[in-house]
Image 1 (tube, rainbow, N blue to C red):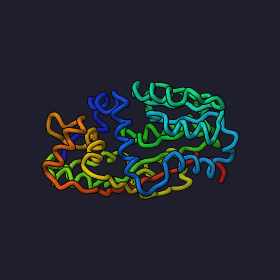
Image 2: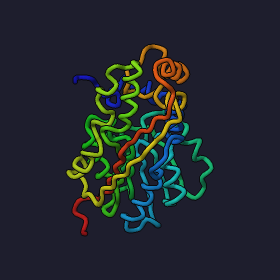
Image 3: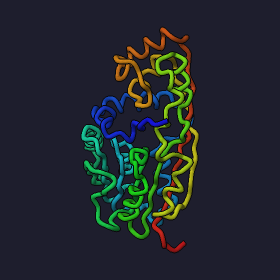
Image 4: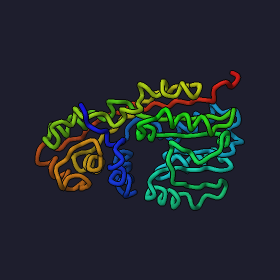
Amino acid sequence: MNELNPFLDPARQPELYGQASRLAGRTSALMRAKTSGRPVPETIVELVRTHHERPDRLGMVLDIGCGRGTSSLAIAKRLRPRRVIGLDAAPSLLAQARERTKELSDTTVDFVEGDFHDLPLSPGECDVAIAAFCLYHSPRPQDVIAQIARVLTPDGLAVLVTKGLDSYREMDQLIAAAGLDDRADEHQSLYTAVHSGNLADLVTPSLDVSTVLDEEHSFTFSGHDHLAQYLATNPKYELAPGLYGNPRALAAALHDSLPDRPLTTRSLLTFVAARPKGRPA
């Protein structure tokens, strides 16, 4: 199959992240459906506390691909580093992140527009670097991980997070069964570039892996209306004109095609904690 993964297509980025409300709506629908699996920021905080030598005295924490600032906010509140920098390529998401964190007082939180292939930090400047659900946006994820290694202090820690290749396959099957995209279950996984099966191998050339943690997260959508709020802006599907970005129209199309019933789907989340090479055990 010779299709370009939407996450790797520069032309699709404004469509995917140009409006913060779209990402917020999709995330909200997914979180309302969640039936198992810890909140990701909670797991990230736990990994930092477990694998960093001084988690109570952190200087700078870098949140790469920070999006709307969910992880940045949790890190600032629960770890209380001296400073958090959230980096993302989407101005609309950064604007919402700034709004969500403006009441924080104990930690300085700044949000910066930038490219994770060229992190705007000096070597050894960062105590902790987080890259959650963003590395699969790079055609050269090893370069991003090398950048992370460059900016970490000698006793620093990286926490990287991705999803399994077959995440949400039940949605693919439903979209195909409804006739809305006959090839829905044949499209390349959104997580092809960096997934649960290859993340640790990608990390190894630049960092020493401390731990790999796999968690299965389950989601049950109440019916077509709920599911359409998530699917309408999912870049994986080739939907007919008028359906993409329009949850009401997509829900109506699903109602016309299939009986309305709950849908349960799953995703394997993988967390890798890693440290700079050459550090004494």
